[in-house]
Length: 206
Image (cartoon, rainbow, N blue to C red; front, side, top):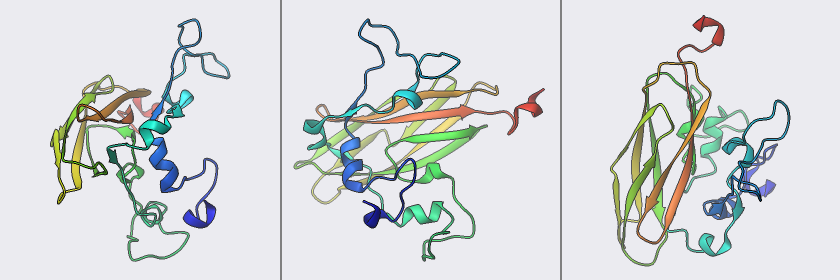
């Protein structure tokens, strides 16, 4: 894995093979008594997606994911400001990490409106039409354009944008939601984590 990516720390950046499996995982957020899972450490709190993660791999679903969020490994260099090696992809400024074509979206500083682009690749055997199913994080207005993606033998890749707008003017914690593409059989879900801000520093809100 290290030789394939040449990037491995804690946490480790996985190979595209492993990421393909991670696209289809299941997580339980309740314990054996049906109560919400508690996060480790103090103070005690109800666990959130940062604590329990994406769950375990479902090999049956991973073998037929429907859609994948593919990425060129060189894209990572651009977002690390090309400190490891020079590439033609490098720019003068480091881009926000949420612009990486990952199967998740995290915005740590939503003050007004942010637009994020993602590209999906269809890996099924026949034509398909996917509809967007939105679960916006609380306090965030969320729009997906287009909301329908059509795939056939000639068109295997589609790009869509997700627009996030903060509707609660507060200095908040992370809130969670999801975006799922559904074709009647495959459910391709990506998690969303957004923190709404008024100011960059909490002291400035006093």
